[in-house]
Image (cartoon, rainbow, N blue to C red; front, side):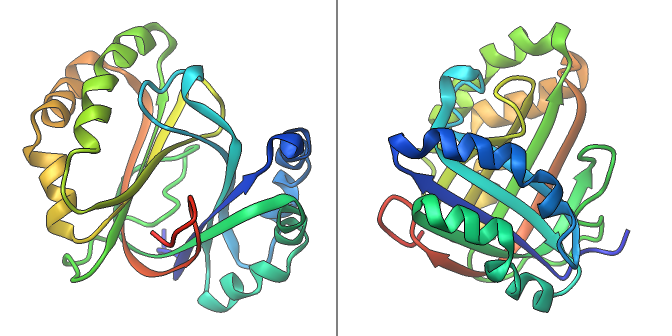
Length: 230
């Protein structure tokens, strides 16, 4: 599959009194998002702090849309689309991460949404997205393995922000993280003990029915998250 030219992750933060409207938008905008011109792959996502990957992590004040665009011009038109305008009316804060695919392995909903071509590591900030669909019989074992990795993540120099993403509170687990450099990402992924242990256990534990890891160059970050631009 040809890699998309650009991938965007939009993150909207809403006030507590607007949570019901956000939940409604999650249901109402799914089809509209997939039908946007140039949207080769599109998902509306909930978010969380990613510390246990259970329902306890869920953040009802923060919601996201991930879209893989055929062209940057298609991505540029997103802000004027009906879904973006609807979320803009209820959001008190909005951040958009504009990402260039740099390498991906695995599948998401049976697809390779970011292509599979790996590019040489780039200078400057990078991002990663992970996503897994858990096997129900292995979920408890996976959840026991997560907390040490989550604690370790937030101690690694060079991490700008990280949060959980998912299509459902349970069973569909993912992360988004933004880093100062490829070296910082590699430090966490390959050199930190807890994460290295989980990577080594994954083939034998059989946690995942489907999994994906993708790396991106960061083209631009617009807006704010928690009051600042990451």
